[in-house]
Length: 170
Image: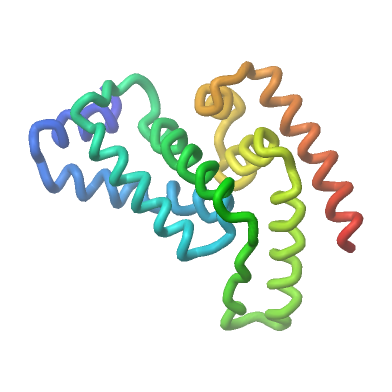
């Protein structure tokens, strides 16, 4: 049995410590995922909270079959896509507190964010999952519901487009 299966079992039996452990374990990775989709810390935090709310709302019917993180990524991805459709602007991040040239760091991040934002949604999704969430190609295929070869194609194509987009902004 894997650790997540035992954690889910304890949670279903009302163990509040297990629920706290679950949130502590998965909150950072879901927040990171939402952060790359939304580019706004506050909005990413809101969507992360909503991801966990949705998970717990349907928790009674949840059947553990694989990686729990993948299930949370699906919920978070749906929420991010819904929010992205509602909001087309890209809020600016606060300036970093330290560093030799904080303005250059912000400009670089903004260039990357703009380039990622220009990608078609399906390519943006695989790039975020692969490079920013460090998921394996097979996991990405499971989360997105597409074949492994299509995941590879989308990553390759997204990298080509990002190269072009970053070249245009340089």
